[in-house]
Amino acid sequence: MHNEQNEMLLSTLEDIKYSLELIQRRAEHITSSDDFLETENGLEKLDSIAMRLVAIGEGFKNVDKLSNNQLLLNYPNIPWKQVKGIRDILSHHYFDLDAEVIFDICKEDVNKLLETTIQIIKDIK
Image (cartoon, rainbow, N blue to C red; front, side, top):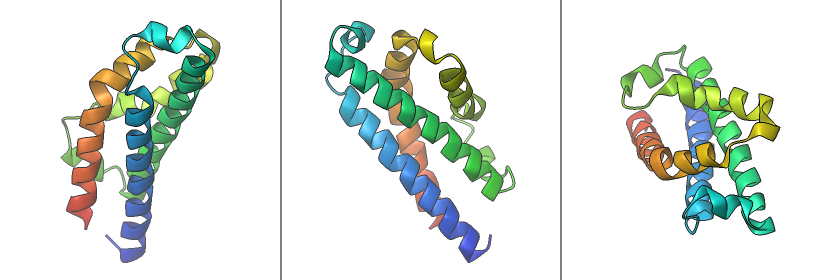
């Protein structure tokens, strides 16, 4: 890959990494989906995490574009179609936003996605 392309990939991946770390911090004290819904602070966290997930999905779509759909194939441990598709779910069904879905993503998927993102960054460097 070209240097400029690598730089754009790394920049996008660093943004994704930052967003994933932010989600981890914001979800740290959330113990159930109800924690998102019971307070104003919880709702703000839910909204901000949902927006970050949209950005992450978009970011990985850009990674695909920049790498001609090749790079992510090297990391089959992640369901990339779902990661990239979360944007569509969240932005088209926003008022049906399911706190349970967001909670599950925070607890089940974010850590693995962050580890893989860090690995991709290392591999590109």
